[in-house]
Image 1 (tube, rainbow, N blue to C red):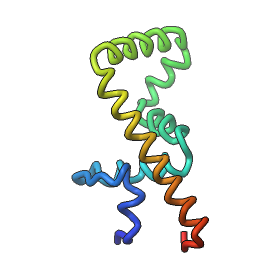
Image 2: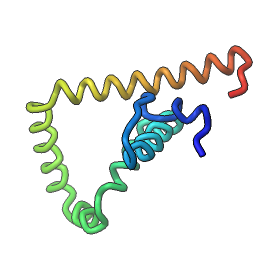
Image 3: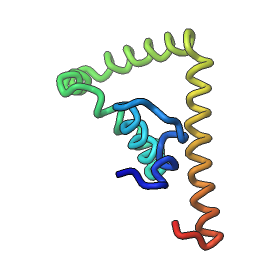
Image 4: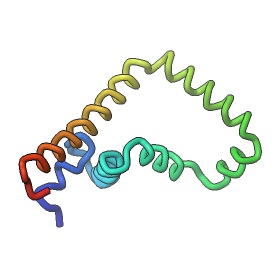
Length: 109
């Protein structure tokens, strides 16, 4: 059952439809608690095991493919990527600020 503080743990407080709501909430709370390492762990979980073996066998090829995809996305979707990154950084900063204000004010958190 959801608690009153679940909305604070969601990614930037956004309301997603099921099943995305739970995944976004988990990712948002992991980012707030563990920082950017949680994002890399989540990306690693998205990659199938067979691809991981290929990446381990051919790391230079994987880096070149990632570079090509990064350049393509940078040319086509740079504004959206910057907006998403800014939103993510802002939500984590606000979460940390809220937590520190709660500790400084003697809150129950």
